[in-house]
Amino acid sequence: MTDPIRRRLLQSSLVALVTASASRGAESENTAMHATTASAFSHELQPKPLPFDPKSLRGLSEKLVTSHWQNNYVGAAKALNAVRKKLHALLESDDPPYMYNDFKREHLVRTGSVVLHELYFGNLGGDGQAAAEIRTELAHAFGSFDAWQSEFVRIGQGLGGGSGWVILGRNEHLGLLENYWLADHATNPPFTRPILVMDMYEHAYHMDYGAAAAKYIDAFFDNINWDTIGKRLEAA
Image 1 (cartoon, one colour):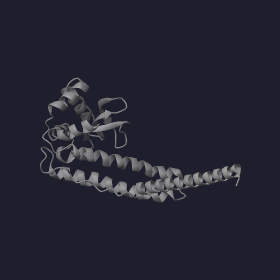
Image 2: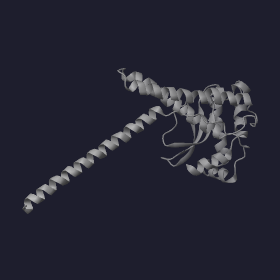
Image 3: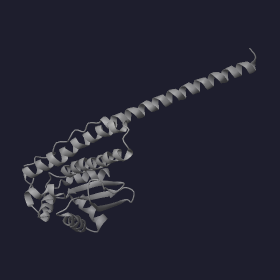
Image 4: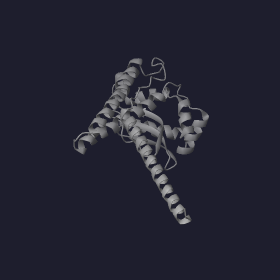
């Protein structure tokens, strides 16, 4: 066999090998993508238990905390699971896109409710005493620890009688620790990692305090688990 013929045969073999390899890679990538999509739709969220004894909180009754956890957090988790299943079914239907987006809005709201409630309950169960290192970090960001707390409380008081959340968060894009006002479960600022979360929906306090939101805010501060806050600050 002459060298030119041998080279042409070798080149043809290499092209066929590369093409087959690329095809297998594409099939593998598509399979992984479909598996990821399927798992996103079929993921079954399991509610987390309260990380503290609901009888142990000061100024927040066991009845209130248990009701809040069961009806608002667990309820949101169940709703999120149902919405995911509905989205999977709608994706394969002939319904118009706006109907799909109605459920995507619910997906956003329920996801926000689940995450924010988990963070909220996760930062309760402590003695309300911030360690010196945390006080120093907040003082560096806000001028003083008291200045931070004053603004956080003021935002909460402004939400009293309505709905929403107050969040101390680190905005990773701006490189800032700031307090944020959230109107609902779907308005967390972009690139912001929540550090301290306070629920200001009336279901968080009305059973104990009626319309006296300020008393609830005081009780919230008495029960902050600052060890958890410290870990969130380190991770952010």
